[in-house]
Structure formats: C-alpha cells, structure tokens
Image 1 (spheres, rainbow, N blue to C red):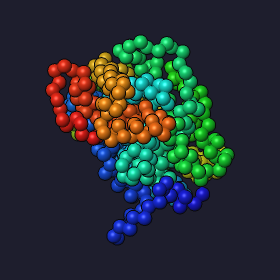
Image 2: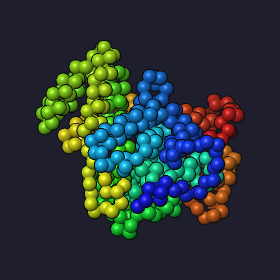
Image 3: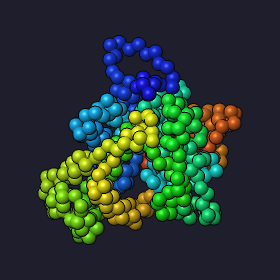
Image 4: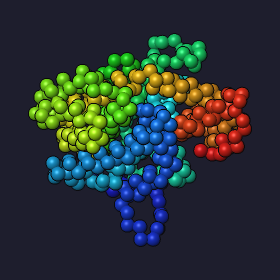
Length: 446
C-alpha cells in the first residue's frame, strides 16, 4: 500500500502556511505537543499521586521519557535491520505516538479509569486508550469536528487494541453494587478496545487494508490473564509495537527508580524478587551486567543509581528484534518489534516488582480509592441534571448528542476524563462539601 494513503487526513487541509516544509508527521507531533490534552498530563497521576512530591514522575514526564526511549529503539532497529529503514520512516511519527499514548487517561490513574468504566457500564464503557483515540480524532479543538486531524498512519499506530468494545465485552457474573463505596476495581475491568461511538473513525483508519488483513487484524480471543473476563485483540501495527515497548521499559525502569528513591522498594525486596531471575538468565549479558546491578541501584551515590538506570534502559532497548508475520499483506502489520525472550522475562519481573510493592501498597491504593469516589460522585451529579451543572459548551455538546439520538453519557465521560486530579478534587469539594465557598474559576471551560 502506498505511503501516501497512510499520510492522508480525514479532513482535507488547505493550509498554505509560509515556507512550511515540515513532513506530515512533524506536523502531527506539533499538534500533540501544543494541545491542551497533552499539557494536562502534567497534573495527572502516573503511579505516585500528583502533589505528594514534586520530584517524581507525572503522566507528562513519563510520556517524554517514553518518547526518548521510542526514538532510541527506532535508531537501534534501523542500524540492526537496514532493509527495514523505509518502514521505520519518520522519527516524528514515533515521537507523536509516544507523546500521545496516555493522553486519554482520566484523573487518578487506574482508579479513575475503573470508576468511569463502572459509571459507563450501560453506555459503552470507558478505557484510557479508547479515550486517547477519541481525543486525537474528535475532541481536541484543533479542528471543528475532526480533533487534531492526524495522519492515518499516526492513528493506526495509536491503536493498541484494534476492535470495538461491543465485540470484546463479556458480562461479569458479580452482582451490581448498591453503593459507590463498595466498588472493587477487580470486578469492573475496562474493555481494552475502541468505543463503538467511534466506529466511523476506526473504519476510516483501516480503510486501506485488504479484507483478509482487516479481518485478521481485528480478530479477538479469550484473555490469557486470570481475572480478566473480556476478550482481547491479538495484533498491533509495527509503529504501535515500538511505542508499547518504550512504554513498558519506561514504566518498569523509571517508575522503579522513583520507588527506590522514595524508599518504597528496598534492596532486600530486589534481592528476593528480582536478583535470582537475573542471575539465572539464559542470556550471558543479563547474567554478567545485571546480576549485581542492585548494588548500584540502591547506592546512596546518586550518580551510581543513574548509571544503573541507564544500563537497564540500554539493555532493553538494544535487545529488541523485528518479527515477520507473512499472514499479513500490509507491511505495517506484517512486521512487529519485540524483546528477545530472556529480556522480555527480565522486564516482566521488574514490572511485577513495581506492581507488588508500589501499586498494591495500601497508601497508593487509598489514593486510588479516593480518586474513584471523586470520579463516581462527579459523574452521578452531572448525569442527574446535565443542563444545570455542566459548563455551558459541554451542556451544548450534551444537548446536541441527545437531539441526534447519540450516546449523551459519552459527553459526561469526555468531560470528567479530561480533568486533572486537582481540578476534579476541587470540583467535588465545590459540589459536596458544605464548607467549600463559591469559586468562580470552576465555571471556566476546561
């Protein structure tokens, strides 16, 4: 398929800007970087709550690190596989995907996502990646109705789960809760897919694919994860596979760094949970370079810890290979990047360490629970009387969707998911705390 098809935008543009020699993907990157949705990531929780400390990572700094790692992976692959250089294409494309990958995540991290998914359970559900797709293609006001109006290849690359929600959803067997305070995240996991409300854009993105490629690319299967009831997609594009590896490396290594600095993960936990796997790895580099890296990681000398973090990132970035799946015709689907098996295992052990000692930590879970309650309270209030409580232009969007017989609850989810942690908390206080005074600023549009 010719590259020009993948550079098309849904809305034809005739911007004749003076001496603008940028490539389509450089323009995409600029639109993402200058968007309000991207700026809001600075005030959204990554793992540790925003405001607990100004040192560690927010969604914004995480996205910048993912972008750095993503372009590093692409540079390595173009050296390792010169025959695939044309496919790797533009560094701006990969930067765009990495910068935008978390743009749809709601306030309060996973807690906010589960809460919105529960409130949207009868209206098509909610999931952060589906919302990212929606912001880029519909909501961000770069154009009137086409969002940032990005290239088709950029939109294909952001599709981590290429299937509509209705195809993936499996109803849970647990009873509905009678009170929001009883919500257990494990019982309401979001469906990882595209919202059915956005099927028109999804169809446009996949338009260049052959019938066979499209059927295979959007095929689904039962999840391999215990406690995840819904079906899962099986494939992603080449660009998306690089972005996802960059995200995984940044999450496992950099969030671990934050946890070490904060004293949340200790040297003894590392020795117990990680060191044995690295010492007995089937890969000689991991055995030699990483087996004793814990000494540097937990050193009180900052430069030694930074050196260890750099070694870990470099190890993973240089262990990425390109796989070929000849069952696909389209090169963007046929080729995928992945970690060599021993490195994939090592990365997974690091991710499990972060999950076990950081994310499952009761103090972090309390913050997540609190965020859950704030999001559900706001949603319930807005749903009770949208034309009274929503800001004026959100009211207008809600009315339009009602008149056109569309899913007006999606407008509520769009509004709440766009909030920062602090804005959502203040608004909740405003609505439910008897002590909160009037705050005119809250009536401003997001």
